[in-house]
Length: 124
Image (cartoon, rainbow, N blue to C red; front, side, top):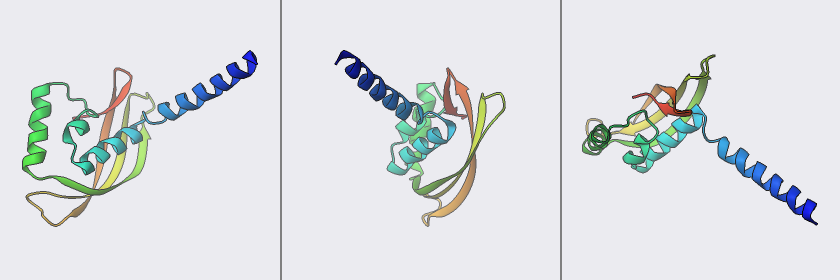
């Protein structure tokens, strides 16, 4: 019975570990970033970037709020990780509006990422 419990526990831990580790690649980070933008949670979006200075983070959040920036839809198109495994790019197609463009406009962006303390972050 102890062996059975150990095997089941090991399988459960392996499944949980694989599920968690799958969300840390460049594509997943950009997806989480745009998901936060779409929900209007600009502070959360900034956690996926290389910004660490709280004043600079708050300045960016305020700009997005003041400009009424709103992502209504997005799609991850591709992911490219450099051979050294330290940089990556993710192409994203998104639809957004702002105080300057009230009608949502579709755009494509290449998001640059770097590894910072072993985690992928959007380069700001």
